[in-house]
Length: 134
Image (cartoon, rainbow, N blue to C red; front, side, top):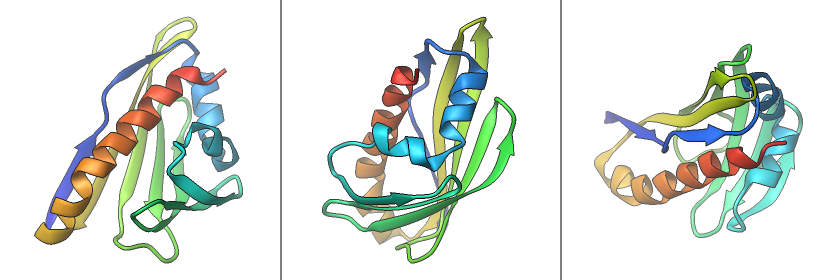
């Protein structure tokens, strides 16, 4: 097992870090950011569960919020592997910020080969959808 780290593209968001943080601090808003491959979405403000077509059911829980700059999420419930997902938000100017997702997990070589490409695509898509947060 070795630490696998996947970093999304860094995106410019036309919204303040505070607004982006508040939006992403509630999983009930995440459903709007999800691609069509995500089904069976259920959520509360701090926990969610969903299925990625062709992959697995994933559960997540927000475990830490650092106001306006970082949200720490961990795997929760029945998941194929444990992980941490960090959402970084960097204030830029008055109503703009920068966002990035960073995923970390201890994966064996076989699992890593199977998940790195689809997860990289998934996190890049989520990062780009952060641009649409109003």
